[in-house]
Amino acid sequence: MTTAATLPALDLAPSTRRPAPQPTCEVSAGGAKGMPRALLRLEGALVLGAALLAYAHLGGSWGWFAALFLLPDLSLLGYLAGPRVGAVAYNAGHSHLAPALLAAASVALGSPALLLGAAIWVGHIGFDRMLGYGLKYGTAFGDTHLGRVGSRALASNDGFNGRRPEDGC
Image 1: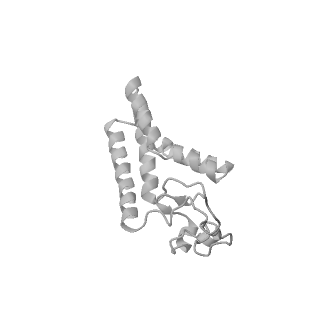
Image 2: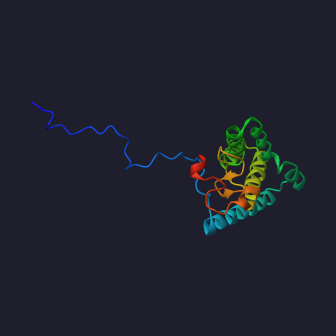
Image 3: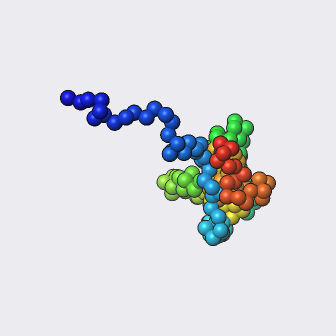
């Protein structure tokens, strides 16, 4: 039989030993920085160069290349519905998954035009990454996996992308 003397005491007072839970941020503390960021941007430039070479090798029209190069940026219209929807739309248009599927469809269907479209699309993605425009987080347009872009990026050199944990991210 258990007696009150053998039971541990229940401390119902708030504990001062544990810190209060902090809000979590979707954005890491600044995205890629230093050498990793430089390497990722260099990779973007190399992807752009490879896409240009592939497009030239396939004999595509440079007029069509110029006309279609900015087409993936129509995904920016998603930001009219808010930052979360905008990030999903932007990332769908700026991930290598869709142009890879387009290239596979080109091979499966025997349609060289689709392969040219995939090369243009990959070139656009490489160009954006070279400029530092990475995949977006749902918090704001400027929050990317390559770090912050835009005017707030210049003002934020503190590792928090203009946000502090005490501000609720």
